[in-house]
Image (cartoon, helix red, strand yellow):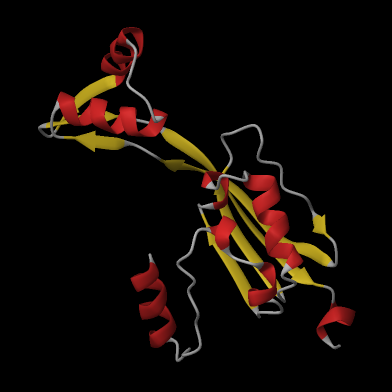
Length: 161
C-alpha cells in the first residue's frame, strides 16, 4: 500500500509525503501536529487501543483533513459526525468482497489460528470446513465486509489561523 501511495503521489507531482511506520500506539501526538492530511486505511480497528481511541488520537493531532477507511463489522466502531473542530464532509459505506483463497486445508487452519491468536477448537475447525467451497483448484471462504469511508475537515476559522 505504501508503494502505491508513493507511485500515485509521484504521478500527480506530489513530493512531500511522510509515512510513519511505527505502531499507532507508539506515536506521540506532538510529533505529528498540524499536518495537512492524516490518512488511516483499514488499520485503526486493529490497534490495541481500539477504533474509538485511535481515531480520537488523530484529531488531537489537529490535521487540516482526516481521511479514514475502516471495516464496520465490530460493534465497537462508532464514527462521529464531528470531532472537536473537525466536521465530516463526506461519508460512504459499501459492501466489499472479502473472500479468501487457500491452497490446502492446513493453510486454512493456519490462517484462522492466526486470526484468533490461539489454536482452533474442534468445533471451530468443523465450522470452517463447512464454509469452504472449491473453485478453480483452490479452497475458498466466500465473504463480504462492510466498509466505511470518511473525510473530515478542520473548521475554516481554524484553517485561516
